[in-house]
Image (cartoon, rainbow, N blue to C red; front, side):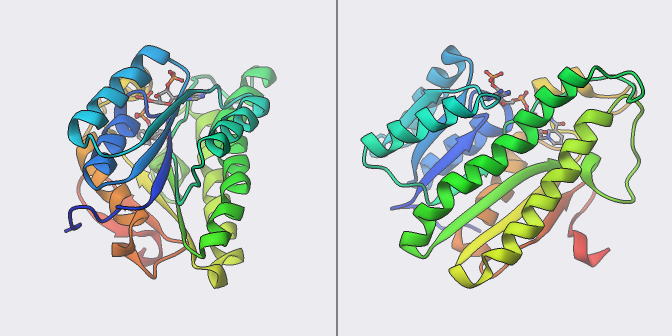
Length: 251
Ligand SMILES: NC(=O)c1ccc[n+]([C@@H]2O[C@H](COP(=O)([O-])OP(=O)(O)OC[C@H]3O[C@@H](n4cnc5c(N)ncnc54)[C@H](OP(=O)(O)O)[C@@H]3O)[C@@H](O)[C@H]2O)c1
């Protein structure tokens, strides 16, 4: 159980905060006292998330920046704004992602590149941006939000190729960053999910597959991984498959 205000004094950057898991995570982090930097493309959805966070906790600072993570220059601009506001990021939640369906042998290469830009390159670049800030405080946590689609020995679905490949890459990012930053009190972990009842699930769910997780359950686990409650774990892949909660290394 996370204590109230367990994120007091921390600033969390959450991508994909306009709806779904990202929005629920933002409102939960607000309850726990975190200042927030919220990212998505759709301004109206971001504004709604900001209002929900402020309702949960009117004492926190919330900076929302409409940003397309496919554009590295927009990420640079985001950090200029963070800097101008005198904020430094302690917690990064790489949650935003897109899904696109299509068989790998004919999937257009420009769509593949675009999906990788959002699902993999942007998380990588965001990590590069925040780690120097975390180094200065000698404290930092990064949580990458992944999928069973990016885990070994789990049933896969035809047409998921681009998405699956991006999530396998995310595991590589989690693993190497955890290893390289172990001595710096900078922890990097991942959560891998089965179906969660969100807009993405409605778009992507294969026939007959039901969502077996709620965004509240997922946000609670992201909070656990982001906070000191999960110290000293780093390089972990926490798998939530609807029936069980286990670490990849337990397999
Ligand atoms: N739902 C599931 O069943 C499920 C299962 C396993 C893993 N996951 C993972 O959980 C995470 C969250 O998914 P979700 O289900 O909450 O999805 P969602 O409801 O579709 O929300 C995705 C969020 O990401 C933002 N986003 C997408 N493209 C972006 C871009 N180019 N730049 C900035 N923001 C962008 C979206 O806002 P805009 O469109 O306005 O930019 C939105 O706020 C993803 O990493 C997903 O892969 C989901």
